Length: 35
Length: 227
Image 1: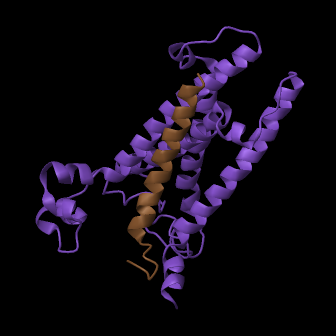
Image 2: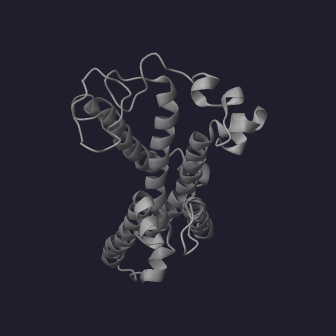
Image 3: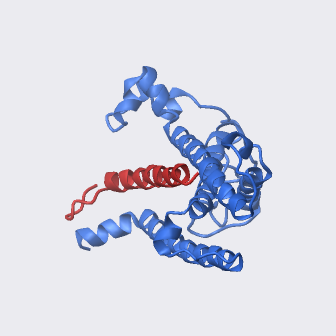
């Protein structure tokens, strides 16, 4: 499941987890810093 | 077809919805900033710039309160459909299959094949975790998003309190407040309505070619048949 550019289905899977976990870390940090 | 073209086709569901998510988030940021700045100007305060709004707790709570309800929806749907049935719905399992099903049906234990994921072949704790991994990750994302909503909402609420010359509240007071539960429940009710609607509408209605629908000619009584 790899194409020439090296982007794989596994990469998309990791990207999804990273967006959600990274987003939550970012937003939570904002909330904690501005409380 | 080139390798890149094939990749785009094979992953179009994720790529299209992922791109649409980013566009909608950008739109939300623009509209949310305009809305907040209207309120700030009306209160005689300085409006925020783009960087100021993207790092504000108001933006953060508006995003996280929606994330938590979406992940709650998927968590409940994934776990609920193990046991709960809807006669005639492609979203439901067949009526005699409620529950976690046999090792043979799930292709685990002695029924695992060489193509099965390593943790499905492993047995023991790894199999127990992997057998629930989709629901567990949705549950973790829900709990994380809801906790984040409680913190960002608390921060945004206190900013409003200070603007109105009112005393700020503690986190414990905020999670018992009307603001927190109004934000939470207004999202939950819409997700729960959508689940119930999907389960029952798909009994009688069809969408040709969609795996979420039964085949157009399938009987209304056939359950667990996807198109």
